[in-house]
Image (cartoon, rainbow over all chains, first blue to last red; front, side, top):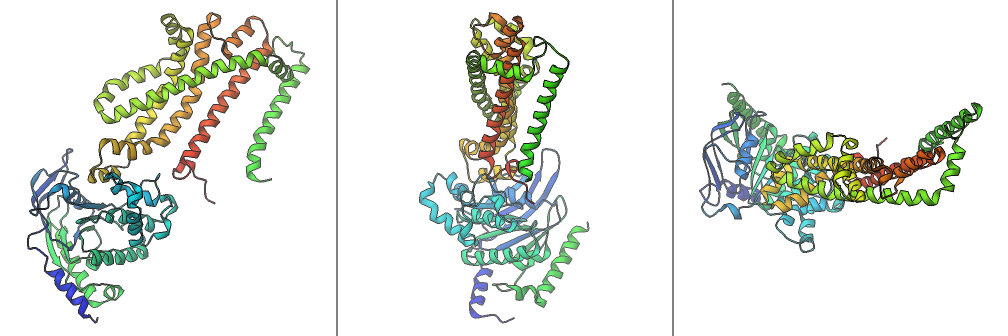
Length: 270
Length: 261
């Protein structure tokens, strides 16, 4: 596959993060729920600015728990979560996308995307253009007035992504966002997500149980063991961006998928 | 004929058949009108006594809707309090249940004894039966907000008020409207029951009072006329709240969607 000069420079600065200190670091983090279920035990993870990191593991291995801990929606029962100096908790912008679109059914696509700004107290008239821009970013310029039930599964997920990106987040957390979609829609959304990420350079933490999806998207993959989840392997995916269908069909892609599959296999045998 | 038209025509035809059967039974068996009047006589009585009956209808309607209004304000208000504090819910909910399961006909005479003003006593009776479906349904609705949406609101630092106003109240809307539809009918029943319990001693002169009065006078056609008015009122209340629910939910809630074919 030919690689042009621009792609190479992009890849270059993606390999070298802006600062050497990670944006957030999880050290020996445990999470045991009130009912005694141990979701993760001794979990380590470093997330660097501007990288696209995938968390790969079998269902129920505590991937979502890691996201919720980083988002501050749950507290760890052991270990520490450290944010980079200066990234104070209240001016950190985190956005979260769930497996389900999780839209408010009584609100239009526009009002759903407007939600984070509304909760900040910004009046609708003043930010209408921002909402429209966000809808445009995900290719939904003409459905602003539609209610969620009038949209297809893929379109609902796009609204959900627009809602996440409207705050220009420092960190975008995605919890198996495309798992419920058909493959064609998923491929398209993968490409659109990658294009957005290359354009905006957010830090992305992507949770998935799909080897193929994680290889296609990420700079780096962290493989988790079964519950209680620990880090089993860390695999850099050093293929250049932009990755398109050409990459999906390349031998390099197949090779990396095999390597990640093998790592996942090893992680699942105790 | 379209299916839509059939949906209206078939029940109407059955109603008409029942009326004809009623009329025939009365005529062929020569049943005297002080035992069972025919439909024609009931209609005649309804028109003849419209002045008295419509005045009584207004009295009953006023009690019904005042009680319903208080039940809505109180029920929704208490449900919101419950959603803010599980402790308030744990302390008060059992008493709301006790209020609901005790038959109103058994408490009505007591209320009439302790409350001097008969109208107020009737209002309390109607309120007691209308209150619970609103409270129970709204409480359930406020709790049934999507958990992920709740997390999302927390992530964006939503205040309690924002969470309530923009998430919990809209989530509770379909439940509340379901409760309202039940409470509307129950409120009418409560008002009628209270009037019966008050009997002829009642200062008001609602429809139940007219039924009692006509019963003493053996004016059976008038009893039927008052009864029919009560039924029609109940049906109208149901239709009004069903329409209201449909109008409010038709854009987004499953219950209000037309099935696709």
